[in-house]
Image 1 (tube, rainbow, N blue to C red):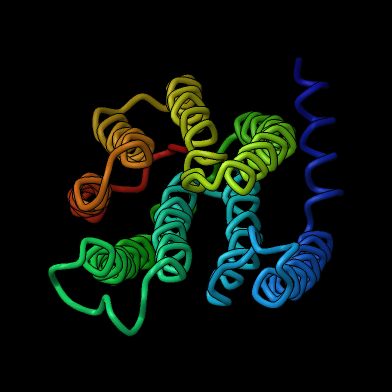
Image 2 (cartoon, rainbow, N blue to C red):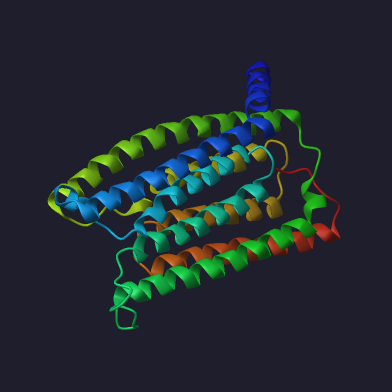
Amino acid sequence: MSKVLSIAGNYFDNYFNPKNVRRVELFILQIAIVSFLLHLFVIYLGSNFPYFKSLQHSYLKAIYTPFSFILFYEVFLLVIIIPKSISEFVGKQFEVITLITLRSFFHDIADLDLIKSINTSNPQFVSLLFDLGAALVMMAFTILYYTIYQKNRKSEKINELNTFIHIKKLVSLGMIFVLLLLSISSFYTWTVEMIDAFRLNIKFPNPNTVFYIDFFSIMIFVDVLLLIISFIYHFSFYVIFRNASFIITTILIRISLTIEKPMNYTVIIIGFLFSIVSFYLYSLRSTKESPERHA
């Protein structure tokens, strides 16, 4: 088993070093640029040629497309950050759900009549205000979380056993494989649903249900798995509570993806607060005691 873990660790280090991650970033950004221009061209066809009338939409809709690829890259970073630190891993989850909220704004604003519908009695306009307000609150809480983390980073930087580090790298490799499978499957499903929406002139599918529900469902079990494995190397009530609070936040994020506004944002913010308060209380305890070995 130790040999398998060592091979997985070396494979992770060789293929997911900063240089290769940068290559992935540039590749995804190139796809984002091409997709943005292509989407603009498709909308142009729908706006100027009767044959493509079913493709007619606001040009603002094109902003949503490249932003989706950028968001996918953030999810990729979330997966490969697993071996570094559970605390950083949770912070990256905060970033991802905040970007999903911003993407919702770009998706919804294209359906709003910017001349006639700017008033508080319009549910679509109010929905956009929820997107903006929630995104600002999430951004503030993410900054607060990282502030607490940076102040207690020394207690986080402990001498973990190499075996546990390799286990986390193996888990990360598995999640990368899952991410690829989910991406392919979700893209196919989204394509079919979008074609049906154009053909039948029905509402487009919820973009958050295409990929992120399944992804965050899997992340819940990954969090639990890492928590249980960490008990082999260190068992502490404080670490259990801190890591359990992180799992609860992941569960709440997953739940938020299937409920309507503004309750979804309320659930997310509660999840953020629970992790932040738990982490802060844990940090108070860490400053009074010597750093312990934990994940």
